Image (cartoon, rainbow over all chains, first blue to last red):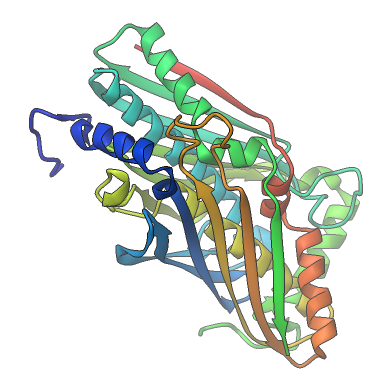
Length: 189
Length: 189
């Protein structure tokens, strides 16, 4: 834990900067237009490696402080070599991380000091869909369940409201529970 | 590259095992019912750590060969400490990895030898949504674009058909372009 503790920091969130950022975006809404990106390189079989580095936001091309790399694969039972989680597991991680970041920011903004946040996300999927064996079965998850444990210096009801507000403002929750158009272009040869 | 090359291996995919798995699931469709999971632990601010290890499938509780851990955070420009990609970037990685694993399996099944597969995924998002500053703006991505480069020993048209079949059978593509119900339970105190 290397978080700097100062007057405006709560839950590791610099609330002064958080509120200043909100004011800056209110004054210049274009600053909030972002484009995020991932590069993927096939390695062998179901094993591939994603690299996340550059993005666009606040009116300029930007980069993370370093390039982040993540492997994905299938386990042996799904004819892979288990060099990483499956893509659908990466997706569950994205959902938990999004809800968590949101609720910590919201708690900080509302003056609530959190002591513990953890979650378990599970997704039920019938692979008869992606295997093409049953046309009545969808390819993706049938349902996803998130179980949060949240501890802090506020009554349980207030902590639940913070989680609810995080759900109401989560980008990944929106993507999963609603639909996003995805275009695919192919340079083949 | 440590892929074992034998008579039934193409693109690093053990096609004999792939076809045997399809036959086994045809004979016992219940084997295809899986549950995937992710655990998430808040660290500080928008920084959290996901752990992916156990899952259920082929009628039994299983684990990956090791636990995989992935950090998520916001960059400084979004009031984080950049200890990992944002959750919405993890989501783009999941999409690319899913489409890639699918197309490599499909190419192997169709007798196509691939020499190169890489992709760039980008997602456009207006953060006025999650910041709560404009009720007409959604929280998640407005649109996502995938650009594949695929090289192999088949005509361009056949390679494009393989990508199209991967799209038609991708779990993550389905989750993003359609909707999945997500329940959230909270143990607060």
